Amino acid sequence: MLDEFREDDIVRKVGGRFKLSTLVQKRMVALNRGARALVDLQTKDLMQIVVAEILQNKIYLDTSGNVQAIEDDSARVDKLDKLLADDGGPGLGDL
Image (cartoon, rainbow, N blue to C red; front, side):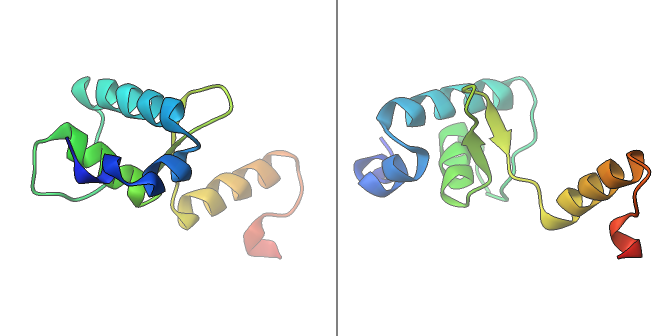
């Protein structure tokens, strides 16, 4: 068992043991199906990858219980700019 699971920090970060278990299971399924790891680790151990993603705030469970990845700031700005442009308003570059 990974030492990180013995600490309550990771449990509190996710919102409880049940949510942690759900997040780990769902993310491991995604990685097994070919999803790209969101952290750079020199390991093939999926559990270590998932724990690192959680500790580095790369993934979380949304309110529907689905695993979501945190986008970097540039991706969020591009998405917001597209949303603003779609409604005919000025883009972020125009502000």
